[in-house]
Image (cartoon, rainbow, N blue to C red; front, side):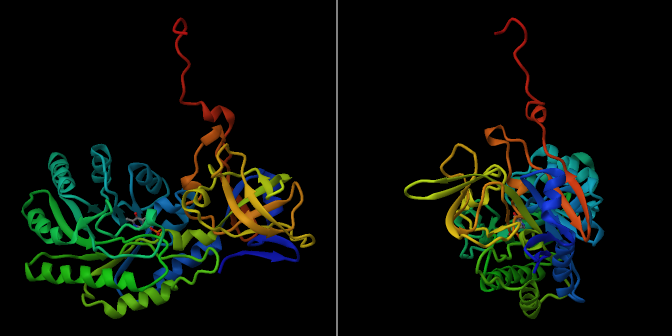
Length: 418
Ligand SMILES: *Cc1c(COP(=O)(O)O)cnc(C)c1O
């Protein structure tokens, strides 16, 4: 459920007509709904009921600081994968202690900064990283809280680029190496083991692989207890899928209920790292039809948004629903919705039945996650604005880049070098 609905034939974001957002800030633009965002967070939070838990929103899904500040205010923690994300969370008012730092390649300055501000947990992915974290912590004279990200070797049905829990993936510590590494970690002077966790992939449509991973890692928790390694949390990662088309993902409530039913260590705090399931449906991408172009094979609608604004269709052949901002439903034809970027792979949707004229506005749904955050300046296209709607109010939470922004960090060669 979201708050992008038609009133009459006009698409609204909460109580604001999408056309009035475009009238103010132009096209293309991202539009987010605060009510949808908040509802999704609360669904996760409430499903845990009395079980000690922390929802660490995965910042990479949508890292706008206004979005992060809303989640921080609701009590969210954050799952970050870089210092850039850390700085965003701090700007947005997130508490350092509620941050978990994930990622397979954390750099020395990133770790230093995270330790200086007091990040709550470092989710380690290799023996070398454990040594690096211990060394830096020693130098800074602190004890770094650590968790191991275990790779439970679970096969999941999703796009291969976003399956992360198989032994051939780069992520996590191989299951059989986890316990030996924890024994090593226990001997180190400047780390404290606080948890264990996993994240097996994204856009998952079944509960079963999550439960398999939970049970496998639960066995490791048992082994830790037998050896006197004290854990305070178990991190079950993110990855819950959303509906882009006709998928039927488990509801957060059903998924969490299934986890709680199997939980054999209720004293542990459960950490969860949802990204997509919190923000995907809270956003749309609005774009304008510039040209309608018919060939003997295909009808193309060339729009003003492109793969640099929304990469998922090009990168994963992902389907995202495309609907008219003003629904006139007269002459339906089949269209490929394509952008101006010079790549054949630049499309937002293929073979869509739509009633289109030039200058019409379209909304690409479920664009709140991995939308703006994956955008780029490819083809020297300025990044587009992000607007947050809260009931009948709208806020510009990121302005459109200008052409001078594009070259801000570039230098011409000095005089005489040409
Ligand atoms: C990407 C990621 C997430 C979030 O995944 P979603 O599919 O967006 O829920 C959580 N944890 C880690 C470690 C990640 O890399």
